[in-house]
Amino acid sequence: MKRKVKINKNSPLKVVYNATYGEYKLSEEALKMLDNNENLERHHPKLVEVVEKLVDKASGDCCGYDTAKLAIHELSGIKYYIEEYDGLETVIEPKDMIDASRYEEENSR
Image (cartoon, rainbow, N blue to C red; front, side, top):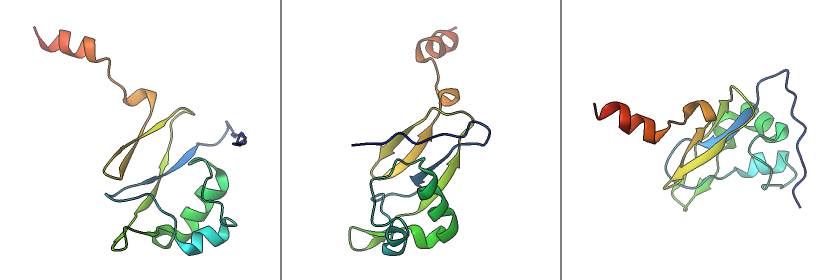
């Protein structure tokens, strides 16, 4: 069961994502600080705090040979989704979206 995270609308929302190919994974040290709760929402304040504090040490080994590279993205609003390709994640906000039909129409002139 997911709990709603209270968002402080007076401060920017931050989101944790994996900035390299491979698996999003927290280190053992980060998991200990999170009471072994690896299922927190990516914008959960405790998760963001741990990644900010540990920096590179927050990233865990994935696939036995590679290391995740957890990073923080500061949102301009409160809506986002994470797009993933082979483990590399990109944080997408509404301002980043393009109306594809309009784009094609304007470039076909």
